[in-house]
Length: 224
Image 1 (cartoon, rainbow, N blue to C red):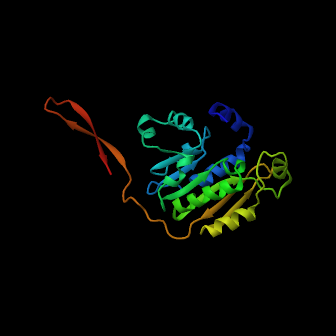
Image 2 (cartoon, helix red, strand yellow; image 1 turned 90 degrees about the horizontal axis):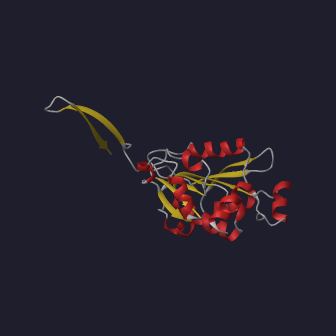
Image 3 (cartoon, helix red, strand yellow; image 1 turned 45 degrees about the vertical axis):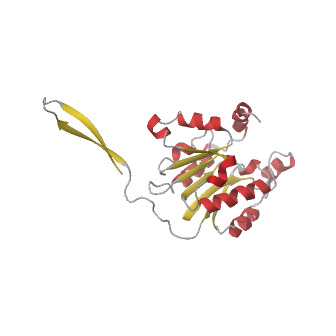
């Protein structure tokens, strides 16, 4: 599938607005400026924008073109700070680092062996005390099982994910079930306590200082 084809295809699988907003809001609540966050599969959705509270912010995509589209949504100074990875580079992600990993519309369209491999890498990248969110195809419900029958999505159940994630050292937190049976997501946590990587946030102060000509200049000073 080319990028152009994928750009059109993703519109065929949107959750309803209420379910999507709950997923995004829940995941972004774990973002903080003291630890990195990762949006995996944000694409042209608003997921990446909602996670700007994490610092630094990572984005992982199947197509590099999505990174270009995402950067256009931010100020150039912030866009340069985004850390962009392709899905084939998942093994290069930093270990024990992310306070939040949000995976959107990836696992419902991947074979189980791929899901297992990606989750193994993501579990290693999650920091102690960090959370991972991902949506999936829940074949315990008729609508989702139909997706499996027409070969649009793989056969998966909550029990399969719970068993796998527990083997990877993650604790089950929550399983969201859409009232329309069209969207499901799970939350897991890595045991431990978050180790904050920064003591102070980055910020800027505009200080007005007089010059010899009694004019005012604006001096931008950065603090780390």
